[in-house]
Every structure is written in C-alpha cells, then in structure tokens.
Image (cartoon, rainbow over the protein chains, first blue to last red):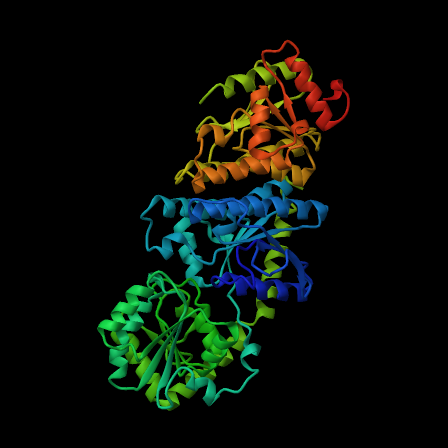
Length: 393
Length: 195
C-alpha cells in the first residue's frame, strides 16, 4: 500500500484512513505492507499491529516545487518498494495506491511485478481547484487520469466521488467501487464528555462552542463560517474555535478583525490529537462548510464524538448527513443558511439531542472499520480473480 | 537532440554484430511501439502519458514509468534472460534503479556530461534535483562508463565516485567495442560469447 502520509505524519485525511484500513485489513487476514514518507523520530521500519510500515527518505532529492518533489519522492518510494517486493519473492498480490501523490510509484511497480494496481481516489485536482487553471493543475489532473487508467479498480469513499471521478476521467462504471471512509468511534468513549476545566481553556462558561476542524483553504469554505458568525452571535453567545492551518489564515484574520470579533473567533492552528479529540467531544456544534468535499471525515468524527453537525449540502457530506435526522444540511456557500442551522442546533435542545443520538447510531452501523476492511478485502479478491485470467498469469 | 542518438545507434548495431541481443528503449512523441531495425537491433519507443509538464524534470520522471513498463515486458518476454542494463545519462536512472532492485539486473551508467558541467556553479533546486539523480545513478550503478579521462576525473572530483568504478571507453579507440564488451562481462559475468 502506497501513501504519502501515515502516522505520525498527518497532513490530511489519507493518513488516518490508511492507518485504520491497514490495521483492519490485517485483522481480516490480509498481510499489509505500507510504504510511506519518513517523519522525524519515526523509524524507517516498524510493525504496527501486524502491519509492516516502511518509511522512505522523501527529502533525498531537492526539488524546485511541490509537484516536482512528489515525483522525486515517488522515485525513492519506488526504489524502496521494488526491493521490498523483490525480497518477498512473489508474495505481493496487489498494489494499492492512495491518490496521485503516489501515482508513479504504483504504476511503475504494477508493470514491473505484473500485479494489479488498485487506487483509492480521495480527492481530485479539478475538484480541489474548481477547474484546471495552471499547467501544474493540468499536470496533476493528467497524472490522476493516468493512475485511474492503469488501476484495475478505482475505489471512492462516497457515491458523489464515484460520479465525480467517472466524469473527471471518463471511466467506465464497472471500474469504480464505492467503499466509505471509516471512523474509530471507540476513541471518543474514553473520557468524560463535560470536562469544565478543559472547556474553560477555550470558552467562557456561558459561551457555546462552535468548532471547525480543517485546512484553512478555499475549498473547505472556512470563510463562509466566518461570515456566518455575526448572524449566529445575534442570537447565541458562542465561541468559534478554528483548528487547522492554511494559506487563507491571514485573510481570515483580517475579516475577523474587520468584524471586531477577535474575542469570539479563536484560531488554534494545529493541535495535538488528544486536544482535538477532547475539543470534538466538547463542541456544542461542529461545522463543515466545504465547497468541495469528496467525503467529509471531519463530520464523521464529530458524529462519533456525539457533537451535532452542520454541514454544507455538497459532495460526500450530503451522503453522510441525513437532514434533520443525523445533522443539519445548509445550502453550500450560504452564510445565512449555515448560521440558521448552527443557531437551530444551539437553541433547540430536543433537536440537538435527537441529531446526536441518530448520528452516533449511523456511525456505528455504517462507518465501522471492520466492515470497510471486509469490503476492501472482497474488492482485492475480485480483482485477483479477474486478473488471474489475464495474459500476465 | 545531440550526438547520443547516433552513438547509441552505432554501438547497438556493433553489439548485434557481436551476437549480443540488444534492445534499445527510447523516447518518441508519436512513433511508439517496437520495431526491429535492419541491423538487428530491436528498438522500443515510448511516449510520455502526461502531455502537460511544468519542467523537464517532471517530464522525465513521468516518462520513466513507461520505460519501466516496456523494459519489464522485455524481461518477461525473454523469461528473465536480461543480463545487463546500460543507461545513458541521468534521464532514465530512476527506471534503471527500479529494474535493478526488482529483477536483480546490474546496470552500467554511461555519462556524456554532468549537470555541474552543463550549468556550472548553478545550485538552484532544479539543478540540485538533477545532481541528486546523477548521484543516485553513480551510487547504484555497478560501473560507470565515460568517453574521456577528463570526464572520469571530473566525476571523481564532483561526486567522489571511486576511480576504479569508472571505465574510460573511447569510441575513437580501435578496441572500443571489445572494451565495451569487456566492461559488460565484468558487470554481468560470464564470458564474452555469452554477453
């Protein structure tokens, strides 16, 4: 399995996805080797609950820009993985790549070892950028298209992504498989829900906590939440806690200053896992205002933490959340609609409780990693059965 | 692009004449596929699947997978009877390394020039990227071949490659093809007839 991020290296959603998927697959009798980028202090090789994790020196080659770095990193990833696969003497049955960031390593090794390649498309460049505007974006898009062309099956985490990927790369229907992302609900059960001293670190006793977790980038719609804040504050005394970082941070700080809401909006930057988990549990409402969202893992985590969610009705979020049953779906790119949902959840306790309970039940039923690992294993088996009839065998 | 095409063409036809089965894998933008030339050399041309590139490096690094694909096809077609890879310049070093690691096939790295000579005193991230690929090539290659003693000395100076790893094979020498075969034999093993 190739991934550019794996704990302790966490950049986005791929890291926890591969972490839980690889461990759950191992519990289902699949031997998984993860090849990923290095991280300060993390060993070059370790075995985590039966998963062999290899971390390659991803900064061996200097690079003029991020995209070039990605291809150079793949050179080193492929070099290491080729040696690992060769030493295993034919024991690798399939290669599984996560996103374009490991495309060339996956494609090259597929042909060299003549083993089928699967890819999970977590996102697309055309979706992230709302179109293709530069040569870099076009190059990444073409790499994604090449990867999906070379893959035996393309896994997407939502029906929305299946349809988006089919459209973006012109893929046949039978090449696409929908397997949802998962969440580990157990980690939210370990500590008390209402820890006043923890809460006091972020908000006054009479302030409700409105939580945003995600990168501060355009497609995540954080600016829509900031613009909704004055409307929420007209009706509810709340503190907006923003976790994450990104290129929009300065711009967002300026908007908050111009609104004179510095005392109501708290930019936390990155926080450690334990603090994030506690914040998710203590949030009176969690908001995911994305403009483009292939899946929406943050909403799922909030639901597992029993924090009621307000999401924009787009992409994978539309499938995770059932309006007025497991959360509130706001009109995308509409601060008024977002504010309405946040206010409704904060003021209507019955609505709030029913949403929290229903959401938690849905998470336990649909987004359990054991179930997702079984679906993934079945996909591997189907690919192996099909590929065994190819001329490569 | 330069004189390399003519050089490899001459070398490969001489190798075939010496009963060395030779495949040349190279780039062409449109005339892709395998052809057997009149001189007996089998030439496989591949195009880059990525049409938009932001610099020569990304063009090169995305082309390498196609090089690997056709090299692997030859490997399986020949039932693994590939004794040696000779890679020219830094461009396909990534493919040579992957094939070496996967199939345990040694490679000779033939150098026409190095980045330090092409862009003297340039240490931009772009130049450094190419230098790092060259370094990787020198590190992973079983042997390095150059055409002049000057090149050998410069590579030794710039990359600290041990002198004994570098073989000077002058195409002007009468014993050129014999020297090439000797080098191949020393890397791949076996006698000259089996090379």
